[in-house]
Image (cartoon, rainbow, N blue to C red; front, side, top):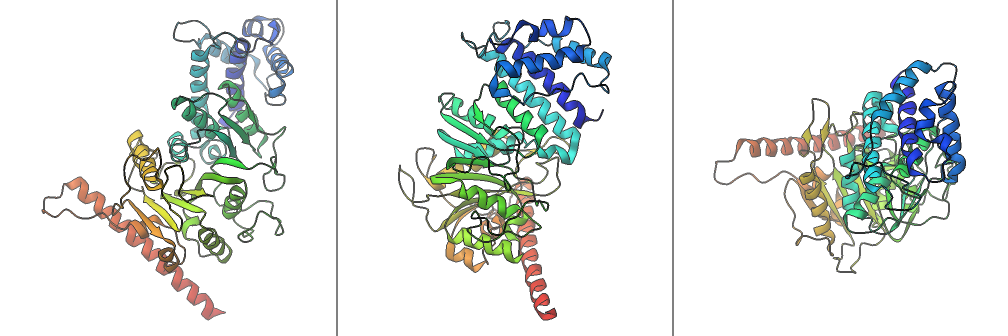
Length: 471
């Protein structure tokens, strides 16, 4: 089998190993010792155990794979795989098994946390193995962490309209607990169109002990909104980039700022997300870079309308190679329904923060880059200082080559193009003539990127004028 097939076998067995000790309501026949040593083909025993878990835990109904007893499954290799997973002891700090995480006691938190990390490791590894398709269910951890650190979902309703395997929710829960909050401070709501990925998400939430509403079944967000009345406090999302095959109803009331083009769903996702925000809600969205500067008539019009509605609070240009599953460069859009003063926050109405983080990150190998903890702290800290309030680490100040707060008038002068390099510019050169080599290279790279952005803008202008002449 290729990785996209055996992914479900590995993750399903990891989950069953967890469930057999975590759920007090599961019958003995579904517990791991009985599964691996009972009579008959092991695949049939595993399927029966999966069905028993779903009957015992209605929240998992339809979430677990019933694929192990199929005729095309090599039962000898399946038994070997079960033995490997069975040998792994998911234990807490005291070396004991986790116990019944959902059945009382201390909940076996140490074991559950460890198994959650194991599950996330497998998700990441399978995403790498599957290449471009892996991006359908997995967002790089450093990108998720950056979004969460910027948005700070302490409490309230957290929503993801294309939740993949649920990584945004897991990181949001970790954020809450790291800030001395409690499990349950956030209420999770999500939706996923792909059936297999939807099952991965439900298992991921269960294995992390997160109660969430991912709808009773998988469904296309544009065709069938699973949470029609929801107004979220926080939205975290990584929609598919530049999706051309999507359900488009020109009369959809979500298109408040303009009807998105049929060939690209980027601004359909963003308008859907904005429509889901409560009165003081905020959103963080991963987008393809083209969304910041597209001259396509419908897209540029929607972008301008959203800026003029004062919904855009921050745009971050991300470094290349963060997404191993796609070569398309990416950015972050942060939306806010309330940019005014209050709660110690500064009045940022009529302003947008631009952060150029393209030179940040550390290469793991020739093809993959990650944002370090320091990178994440610098970007998120800059945003919090700009916004003000309890999370601010000091007063905000523009930093040439990295960040700048721009007024709407200036953004209008740039045709509502939101490329951060255009506003942040290049870093200031050292004055003493002894500029360190590393700093000089970084400065020159910034200048080159800024000039490439300007070249792209001029190219768009020339093309537009030529098209008018042809017409």
